[in-house]
Image 1: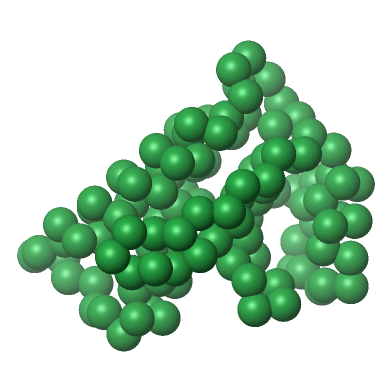
Image 2 (image 1 turned 90 degrees about the vertical axis):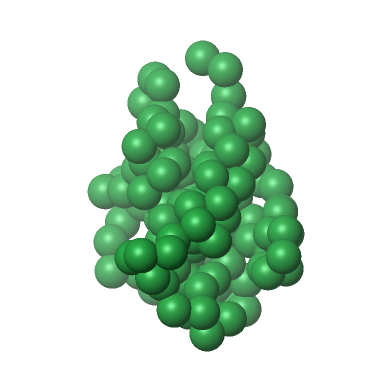
Length: 115
């Protein structure tokens, strides 16, 4: 399991990315939490646990997480950050959202094991 904590520029939100290859490892990490889905059913997830933000990704399958999965979970994180700072998402001026999304995707992609 690979775990790294980041702090977003400008907004200062801290979040931890976890890459895991065994469902048992991540289930043990979040012991005591209840979820709607099993980790075995997910390739990635955004989790709020004990006042911390986690973005988790399974690396069990070769080539995972894909860039699409990283972008998908990163978008959930961007939305959470903007909700937390009371910043509305704007479809006409989305540069702040796009810059943050790109920054998050790059940080996670840099963690991805080279397979």
